[in-house]
Length: 362
Image 1: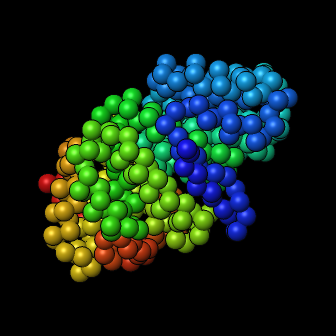
Image 2: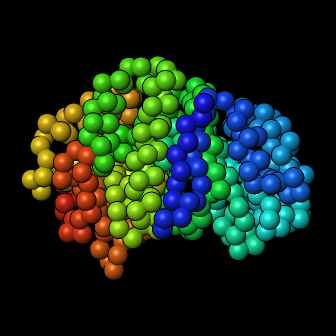
């Protein structure tokens, strides 16, 4: 039995998030799009291709007229316009038209890049998300944000383009490296911090079985995170208000990610950014030191880094000036009034950020 979460925009249905334990239900889900005379290009990276491309391509080939694939080297450094250009060339050579589909098979890099190509090829064609990493299953595949990095500036070029379907195979999380799983937990913990204190406590309580990747607990975790993200995205599909709350930890996290030359994984950088945001919230008298201590416990339980070396607060703060969340020269910074209740603060200064970074740079 699949778990299905419908996503709406302005009251109108957009797509379903479907959670299964295998890829077997994908054929059933694709059948709703009447693809018999259409082409589908599966976009994936070199890591995921070796694990799942053959299986997924066999399923897709039963649903459409022509199936092809585009494989690019794994890694954030390849999420750029050069890779998109190569994908465009492939689609043109294979005569893809506006009625054909792309299918993103992989993690956040694959989904972001494939979605951006779908948003811009022939002014927009349909695409489907099949996320295989924890980070993509709980966060990046949902909500229609697409984009690529530009000169190492994170997601600087992008578009909002909703998928037609998000099909999540929970058991794919079993093949993730420990580091990638830990990275995904950065976005999971963030969901609890911004929206659901009871979920945050649940994560802390069940950390041992989540770490063992027991499927029943992974399914529950992905389901709750999907509901949280769906709820926020539905209220604010193009990030004019509440959706900005999902950026907790991202302003400083993106800067740390760039300064590490992307050697630090995205979710880990988000976690570090959450520590700094919580420290700023403490300095503003909003929450207690005990809450920061608890966050560090949670992050340690999921093997997430709680400090970083070799970079300075000055360099991190300087990079925030290039952040997409700037508004007329002011950063829309996400802070915590309490656990489970985040808000947008436009009064955060460079000094506030520098002070907030002290716990992770010490």
